[in-house]
Image 1 (cartoon, rainbow, N blue to C red):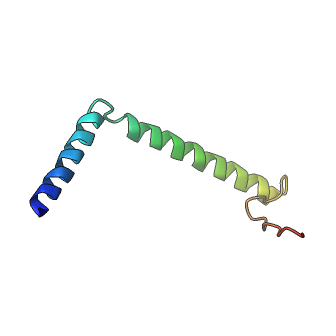
Image 2 (tube, rainbow, N blue to C red):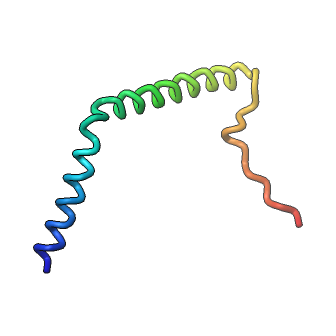
Image 3 (cartoon, one colour):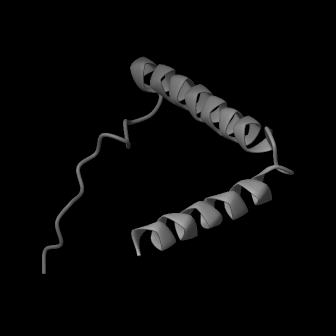
Length: 67
């Protein structure tokens, strides 16, 4: 019983890894680009907040509904 479950899990992983072979490093490159864009945005935003050009909307508290 346990052997069948382990073999089933192994077959699923082998199938997934076979699907990922053609993709290769593209996933890594896409994540690197997304992270780099996020870091650049964050640094520019921080400079603007420190100079007082914009308010820090990332630190604003959420207002509760007044119903």
